[in-house]
Amino acid sequence: MSARTEALLGAVAPLHDAPQDAAVWQRALGLLAATIPCGQVALVERTGAATNGELGFVAGTDTRFLDEYRREFHRVDPFAREEVVAQLHDLGRVAHSSEVVRDVELQHSPFYQQFLSRHGDLFHGLGGSFALCERSHAQLWLLRPRGQGFDEDERRRLDVFFAHARSALRQRRWQARIKRERDAALAWMDGWADASFVLDANGGLVVANLVGERVLRAGNWLRLQDARVCAARGEAGDWVRTTLASMLRAPREGHADSARCVALKGEGGAALYAVFTRLPPAQASSTDDSPRFGLILRDPRQARPQPDARQLHDLFGLTAAESRIANALLAGQTVETIARDASVRRDTVRAHVKRMLSKTGTRRQSDLLKLLVKTLPNLRSLSGASEAGDAAE
Image: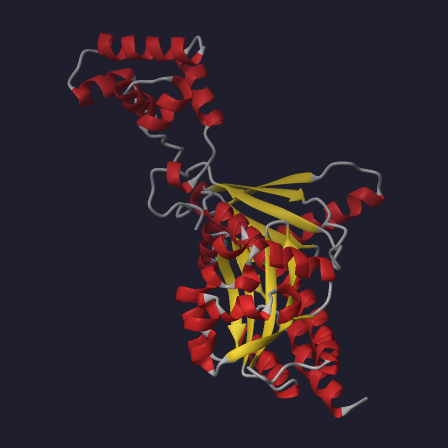
C-alpha cells in the first residue's frame, strides 16, 4: 500500500465512527487536501432544487471561503445547476470540472469572476455529486488555480475518498433523523402528566419522562439503584423486579397477556397504581432485540384534565360559559356551588348542563363527565397544574 493511499484511508476512517462530528469532517478534508494538494476543498449538502435549494451541512478547509459561498455565491454555482448535478449522478464517479461545465463557460460566469478568482484564481475542479435521499444531494469538490489541473491518478484516489464520504454522509443523515424522531418521542412522553418509564428486562432505566424523573428523585415510590429502577420500600418486596420477572415468564408458560397492574399503598392511605406493558420488539435492523417494558404510575389524587373553552368548542361546540361549567363539574363542584360562585340562578346552570348533554349526545350528567374524562388525554397541558406529578412524589 502506497503512503498516499495509506494517508487517504487514514482520512476516511474517522468519518464512519463519528459522522455527526463536524470537526472530524474538517480534519478528514484537511488530510484529503494534503494527500491531493489543492487550493480549496468544499463539501456541501443541498435540499430541494439545485441552486435554489436549501444548504445543509457544509465543511471544508477554509472557513472564510465557505462563509462567503454560503452567504452569496451558492446560488450562482454552475456545478450546482440541476442538469450538472444530474450529469454527475449519471457518471457515478468523480469527474474533472471541464467534463460537466466547459472552461469557457466557467471563465465568464460570475461564480468564477466574482468568487473563485479572488481566492487564488481557482479554475480547475475535481469532484462529484451523489444523492442522500429523494430530495437531497451532496457535492464534494477540490479546486486548484488555473494551469494546475488534476491528473487521472488523483481522480482515482479521490474516487476512494468519495465512496467513503458518501457512505458516512448517508449515515450522518440517518443518525440525524433517528435523533429527531427520538427527541420528538421524548417530548411527547414529557407532555404526559403520569410518571412514565421504559425499562429493560432487568429493570434498567432506558428513559423516563419529566414526571418520572421527579418521582425517582423524590424516592417515595421508586428509586434508582445501579441504574436500575426498583421499589423504594424494600421491606415490602421489590414489586418492579417481581412483575418484570413474571412478564418474562408469561410467554414461556403459554400466557398471552402483555400487561400487568400493581396496586401500591403508601403512608396515610395514599394509593398509587402501576401499569406495566410489554413493548413491541425492536425493528429488524436493530442489533438489540432484548425485551423492553413500559411502566406508568397513575395517581388518583392527580388533577383531572381541564380543557379550555377552545378545545371544548372544537370537540363538542360548547360555548365559553358551558366550558367553564364543564370544568367545574370535572373538578367535583355541584350545580349549587357553581351557581353560587358565578352569582347566577341554579336553573341557569341546569339549562347550560342540559344544552351540553344535547351537544355531546349524553343523557345524564354522570355520562357527560365520563365522556369528558375519556375523551381528553392525561396531558400536563390539560392538568391545570404547573408541576404535574407532585402528588405521586
